[in-house]
Length: 67
Image 1 (tube, rainbow, N blue to C red):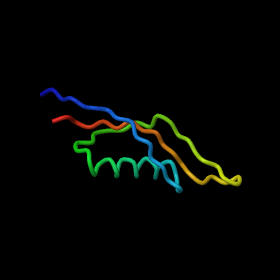
Image 2 (cartoon, helix red, strand yellow):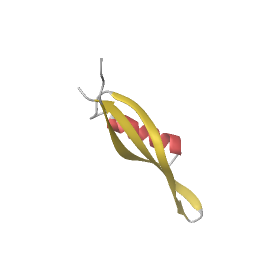
Image 3 (cartoon, rainbow, N blue to C red):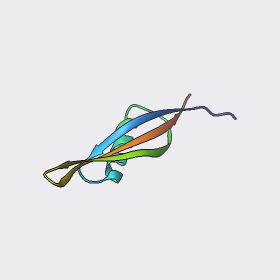
Image 4 (tube, one colour):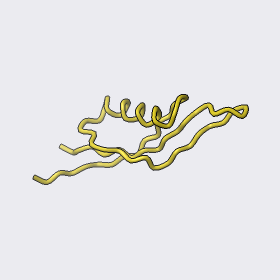
């Protein structure tokens, strides 16, 4: 049986960690996309305010199976 997937790019943001940024992006995407199959982390960024890390940003690609 052949399968077909579509891959999209998302940016997850968290004040806690990169891992939390990835998890929140996938959790949010799963509310509207069905058949999520895998993800890859493409980039990681952060925001610094007053010499403190205030935000973690994770750019991920997520694939989901097409019906």
